[in-house]
Length: 492
Image 1 (cartoon, rainbow, N blue to C red):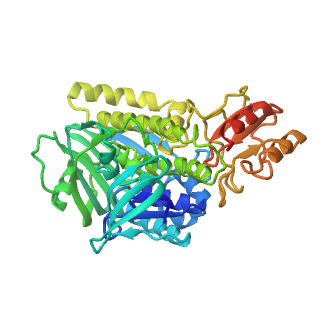
Image 2 (image 1 turned 90 degrees about the horizontal axis):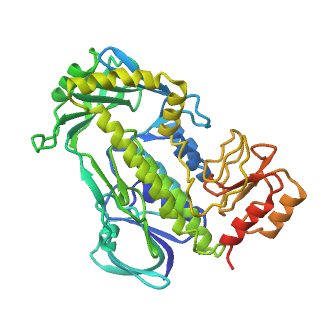
Image 3 (image 1 turned 120 degrees about the horizontal axis):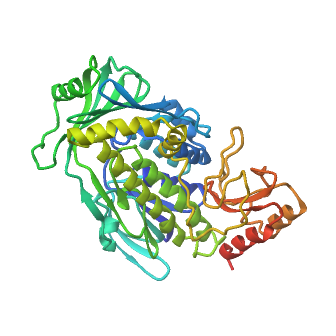
């Protein structure tokens, strides 16, 4: 039996992808070669923009109940504060970083997926696939060793850095492994000066980062070698304590380790996230430094970007192009930006040499002393600044002062039902309920929500995508630009 979509990989990205596709009514199978969900904390933070997108799924409260809110981040060098970035003033219903172990994120997404009638098929491995004219033929290896042939309209590889899907597509994974060794420790700490804030501590021998997970549990990360192979074994608790004693403010005591590991940082990305009926998302398409905690969020947002496009095409609401090609263009640009930003943050943190460190420590307070810089840093961290200004999908209208432009995130208004919620992906028209607005809705009832939303500014009209980004921004009454966009994507 042919299905709409086969999702390979059941980490946070694959689970988000499958849940979004199922929410939109597509027939979905999600397979995972691991027998169980991870029990490791791995990715720790869910940022504001991801929480807004999860809100469309109707699952945000479960995350809030399970997570720990952090509203600030500090950068220090010695006893001097370099920067203090606050998150509680960002323009989102979720003005904080939600700290939650990846094991919990996967549990919540798995439970949400099951509520939609889809269960992860574990100990099932994708062996190979062939992309045809109108379908993909995939071969799975089941837990009993038997092979199963599956016909699917779309195949989405969410299967991580060692992606089988990417390898079989023959796509290059271009980039480098950084010349540094890192230790990771999930431990309980006492004596942390600001226990509910992220701490980045610059030291002559390297960087120390401390992330709160709960009121007493923390993630500790530090670079400890030059990547030449001298660091091979996972650290002991005593070694972690020694690094904190040298680089930290003093008085922090570690105990009860949950996870101790050594790791290396890879920075790699594919050039194209799509090949015919096959797509890549998450670590299968891009991996980068954990600085900024953007990796898992970027992958989950890959899924939110692609799912509504696949659903509208599969349900016969829209033509395949240019909708599906926009996925790689949009998310590839985001992945490139995240990779560069995370790389810069890492390089600054592990800068070596007294002179270079002295210059860094003098310049950084001056830069972060500027309020616009702190505001921009908060919006970048929370991922509210992510957008698609150069998307090939959008139609440019006349700019409206005071409102979002094409490609920008549409403002999320507290107390309102999120744009994109519900079981059918539709665009929202944000405009006065005029005769022109109602006429446009009547002309495209399958693509537009039945009632217009409040405009963001009295002088404008906006067409907002199901994932909450502006497709068209124009002056009030300029229905031509809205209609040009809808005509281009509507099923013929």
